[in-house]
Length: 124
Image (cartoon, rainbow, N blue to C red):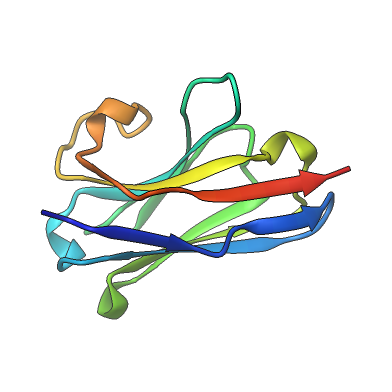
């Protein structure tokens, strides 16, 4: 069983920044992807960003490209999401997730374990 603990959410004004963290309870070198999804009220969960753990290759949704940066700390089994130039439409619950599959990274069903979520609210 993998436990993922997110932190770093909060309330920020448009144009501001937040940094999310997600710590895994296992040695994440065994995972294939570790990344972030988000879900706004009344909407489906959507892909934000992920990192292919072994190689460090990163992937982003078009809506966050050039504003968000995903990174990892192997020694701490932790992935980070630096979010800059935040917009009100970024408001959502952000979920960390881990996949042990090489299937397409952008689908929620590819991921095997999920964190509890952290709220990000961007005011205009």
